[in-house]
Picture 1 (cartoon, rainbow, N blue to C red):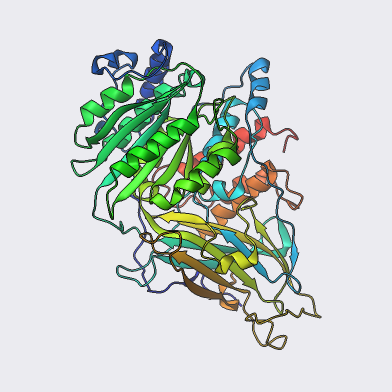
Picture 2 (picture 1 turned 90 degrees about the vertical axis):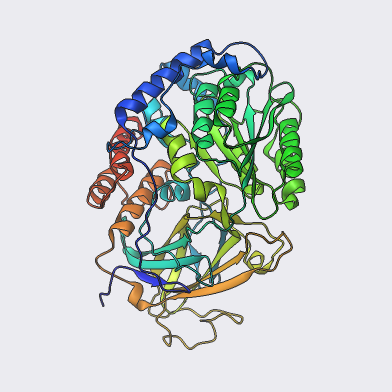
Length: 562
């Protein structure tokens, strides 16, 4: 039976098309800025952090950020692929990633529940793009971050809806395994900002010697200059730098004093060791001192993650973060640079600090994260959002969650309000794919008091039920959560998948190939290119088209010539 491509369930109906207020980024200007940053990096020498406004000569003057917003050209998020020399390829081995084992297929009869934490990080996609453009096979690929990098046209909840998100589901034949089915679950957060109070933001900036590269500290400074342009007199900004020691460069400066803040940023110099833990403590102290009740209180850490003084392992740093989490201060992480990138450390800090993690490889990516997605990056609308999918054994024999390998939770954690989970910002969407093996003729029986296990086989033709649990953004860690459920019935299946399904599944398929998944079956770069190319849609910012080009570039660096 064929039905409409989308099967959408959400607490309050809404049909308005979701649109991001994202400005186009002209290619020529991006190239100019890249050249300026490279020249700036050549002149950034010395040690420590300085605050003199007249030190701005370290960075070649660039057009004001508002000058970037009016162009119609498509963006240029990455540079042309350039293969590095062999000795530079060897340096990539110094990068550190947390490669969690992928989730295997589960038998619905014995494991009818799949529980995981929401993830809105996007770092893995831009980092993959950087590695491919650099001419090396990518490491540290997290499939859910590839998929969640892109916008999808999920209906958002209506204004004043009971819950701050909607859920859209769709089921079709799995593109890489025609004998299986693929179920897409999309959670779309409201775009309504949850507070009218100001921002209290602490920029925590790594100025250690490892940041002395054109694509690190100079790019960092110009990226945060873009963010400053989004602030006004109701916002407060503090700046903390850290290397061998940490320094308070600015304390609660009004956001309207953009020139002062940008001068501070462009005066930064790199040098010394990396004592990130002390910098985190100082940043938390400033954020708590300047705390805005009911506002957005956030530390934004910018680093390559290469901590080498004091607590430095992901475990030590997350322990520090967890002790501060109750303060109501969130931590977001922006990764910069290459060769010594410590992706595992930065991801752990963001995950445990109730924040998000993005990787900045170009100024265009900085604009995407800090300007175009300002609301979703800065303002949480649903805390500790968990999903628990209950599969129906009468319809599904076995299943596999694709990605989210380090976001899996124990089934009992779903009801445990003390268990930390992902936070979702205004306008964020979370997409997950389940690969389903249809039930055999003998079916399967569940156990316990689950929705489907107490029914006779065949009495329900649902694929699954999606349970979502979340906390209000203004509640503490001990606050009670709310659960909402969304059944995925037989009508969710379609033989003509939507463009969003087609494109997102193509991104997931690239992830299966890049991670050498045991379950990639007939996945191929040719199929990825064909499906993604046919599902570009309006693509006003060129990101889907860029993905198609990236697949072609990946073919050149794939170790198996896929």
